[in-house]
Image 1: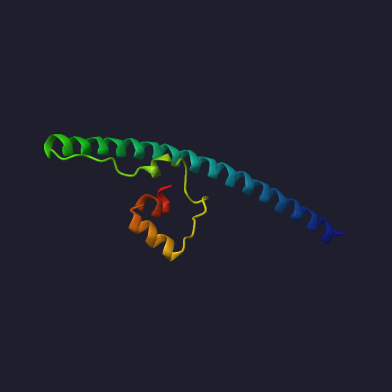
Image 2: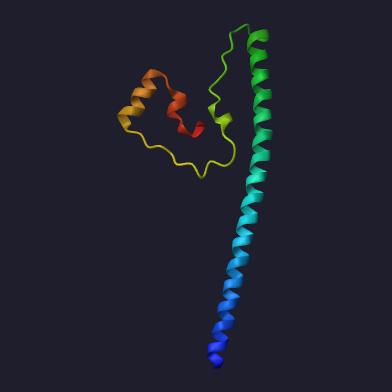
Length: 110
């Protein structure tokens, strides 16, 4: 009987600990997501400033035409860890390279 009561007590403690762990994981995950998004917004603003400076330098100082680089990665919001990367055949990658589709080739910028 004492072993049964100890087992029930330990089982209850275990279930309570599991519940606390789930709550901690959920709150930590939310905090991580929020901090990531804030940092990402700051980084995007800085990238935009750098692109503006680059454009001004090209046009005004160097007298060269300026082309906006591929900025598909700026469309992303949040961490990339959850996204599944697409695998491509070697021939397909070579064809995209030859066709100049470097933005599509670099799947990390999607």
